[in-house]
Length: 600
Image (tube, rainbow, N blue to C red; front, side, top):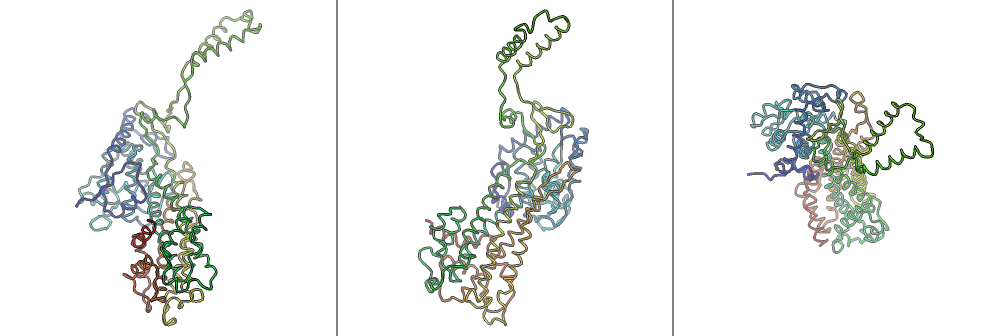
């Protein structure tokens, strides 16, 4: 059975779509427009190679060696050397699922046509993706400028038939050449600039960031469900979620969270559990219950901001140097403004008048001219100046030996800094800080659930306390992860270490920012899972009363895999079971119909 196909065009890929490619259930292809752009970009490179012009990245060394020229018969070998030497990553390899995202994203960037790679090599990359043959890519070693050089070099190395590659049939790492041959795939063969085209960019940062932001979006919604359930079993009130309160502080995220929790707790009328106590004798709930819209709200707005920024990054050309066709140069106004062409008549008349003034009032009497040869030279200089004034002004790109830009009749090669990972690095540091707060406030609700002096429920939510410990250490686990997050949320992108002999003297550290963000999000998923487990267990002590239909549906879902805690058993299995419900979307899909029904 054929798989659905995602057509890459370099302009429309979203983080959610990229994250969805982890499953291996979708094939890739290029749009016709993308194929044409890739061919046009490659033609620019081929023409420059034929002209034997000296251009960075095509026939020069790299970084500090950019002033070293390379003979035309060694241009392919130059690119191979680049990939081999830059394959310097360390640490655990990315999973095949994450490598799948990395490869797909690099293909999407190449689809923009500014990399100069050949269409045949892009087709080979797509075939490897569709066959599930993923190179071994260590997760550490990038400083996030010039792009993610080390991890992308390992990606290219495997596609060249060197290094290691995951066999899709066994899931084991084997020699890349053997895996490619086994699955009837041809290794890529690098021509001029193609090695550089494979590795210059922010794709590791953006790929891992896409997973982080997609999972963050999901867990943030589940955090609202957990809050509603905790508020219900702790016999709190929905009064703090009244629309009038949130209307006068109209942050978007705050509005969304308040509406969502209010709907879960009182879709039409209060639940039987709420009616049993009606909040009598209480004035207001603790902050962790009352201020969820304000705290969760900014987390939601942070996720939205990062998602939008990453969407732009996924569809950005991040190469260096970059390839532009002659038509693209012609249609673009340099530096955002135009210089109008000079009017020869206006300029020459103005100049002539200025010259004439020099000879008015006796200041320019003919008797002053005593040297005829000097006068001739002065007249020639004046004529040259007039001629220059009559020439229309225009922009051009200037070439010098081993320069970073070149114009020919076929296009332009220009060096810039789009490879710098500061944008996604800063965004993912921000994501980690924002999403962490979901776990911080959740841990405080867990404390209220397991503490009998705060909940009015049995200590640690278990009968026969002392003989059974119940959720005692589950709360410790949540506290430990929240504490770890406090360290992990220190921004990686505030650091920079000069590299490449000070040629690359400011870097983003975006790879670490992305890995940290993912770890923080996973910790949040676990903490929210523990809160939901506690809320379901607390519900056992309120039976036979029932909560709202939506929260009863959550309870029922959890109980499909987690039994009520009647006595001590291994807790980690239960935590992982509910964490998986959050990760794969089952928990949200359970409550979403109730929210949609209410809104309609």
